[in-house]
Length: 267
Ligand SMILES: [Zn+2]
Image (tube, rainbow, N blue to C red; front, side, top):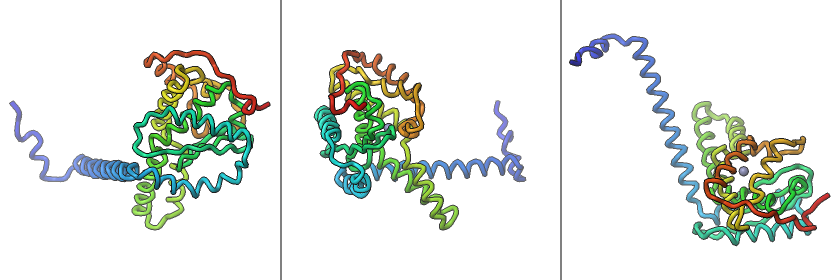
């Protein structure tokens, strides 16, 4: 039998336990509210038409354009990007038009700017040992666009900004800090999804998955000071493992490599 008075009588005085429970519940409610806010704001922003995102990205692209003078490398990289684009399933409602800016600088990095622009640095191209490996990096970047990761980050930034200024009053410098922190890189799960997207697109393009893990595998061993790609893409060894599991699960064949063209083979 359950004694109905087992817990009831204690309400007479507020014990420290009850205060603690109430405070805990209060913070849980706040956390839930924040989560809901983040979820709904992000959902709303992700519904933004691709056209708007492209306009938003234009300002950012203009900053990088002067650093990317016309070059044969840029033309060839754009042709590779077009090949990937031709293999993207028509799941998206709106037309994307990916383009690539090739920046002749030593940093080992590639990035996806909002507005369909992929940036590739010379330092990254120098690391590439096959066309397949390069295509995997490009496919991964396209994955960030397909999953609308930039917009998700903007959503998160907006929520963080609002919450910080509500709690601390006008502390815009904190907001700026939050923006920088959240815009600088994608979350681990966003990266994982971009890897999976990249693998699938690579497979569709070549009919096999050679080169899917090469760049991350090299990143996990042999690093120089210029490896900015590692800052935004941590834990390369884990990514290799994850990709290998995916390749096996999906039954993807791993075939022959396609060598890089002469233009893209850098000394
Ligand atoms: Zn990424």
